[in-house]
Length: 255
Image (cartoon, rainbow, N blue to C red; front, side):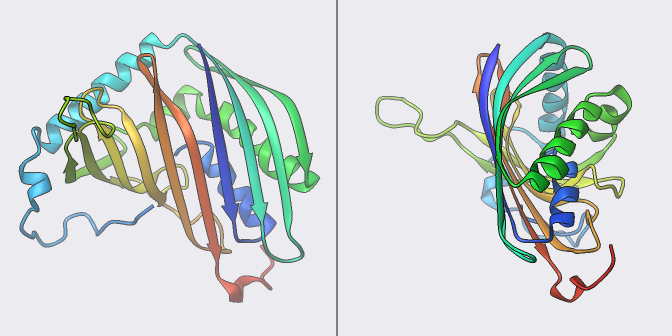
């Protein structure tokens, strides 16, 4: 199976911070929602009319993810990584095209097809990103980053029903549950924010979040947005975007 996807990033930070952010985003995958366990408020209609409860949605999500993981034996994809950096000591851009190959249960390899732009970004961002992706499929690391109850708490915060026209054809992606996710461990390798779950396949179709732990001393806020597309019976990344904002007063620090 071959999939073509694109990963784009717009980073407003130091080169050091950009490296750390991409190292994290390779492992996973926004809007920061309120603290878990806050005072209860009346539920909006988008939740009360949802066909399933949060427990039912999460049960289906975990079960279907496990089924898809067992079924996917081999995958080939072409990726385009782009990074635009604006800041001290000068603007830089880079692009790299990579062929990625995955073999179950825990093997991932990459072949660089082309690269252009800043050598610093290519060597210290893109290549470290590929190295971290290889580490991410190792069983111990993979278990700590799965979207399940071992690693996260969940809350149902919305339901987006399917919209159909007079002919019965869907005008959107179909029904989707919106979940708030709260990591149980404070780590750079998990995230907090919102995920959209397809109401039929129970696959994640979109993520808006930020790392559970600040990836760098330089970083004030990190925003992650992932979108997924369906290919046959599987959902794969279509576009991953990230933005990094830094504290201006931290520029002089030795980090």
